[in-house]
Amino acid sequence: MKSFLAPLIASLAMATTVLAAWPINDMCPVDGKQARAIYRVKTAEGPVAFCCMDCLTAFEKAPGKYSVTKKDPKK
Ligand SMILES: [Zn+2]
Image (cartoon, rainbow, N blue to C red):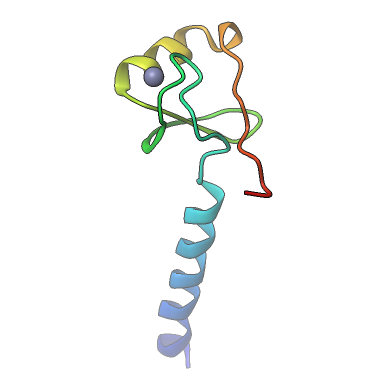
């Protein structure tokens, strides 16, 4: 029984993690380009995505300097 349930629970946990890690924005808050989900940092509001590693680094140095535009949930 235990060996049957373990993979099921593991895959459920993974699916939840992926959804929770989805960025809250579409556009890079640093320069306004299309953000990519692979470049992201966790913030109090949720994961924020950037267009490149340079923007991510710039944001991490001064998070208060940039305003994150959240994506429209209706779209
Ligand atoms: Zn950028």
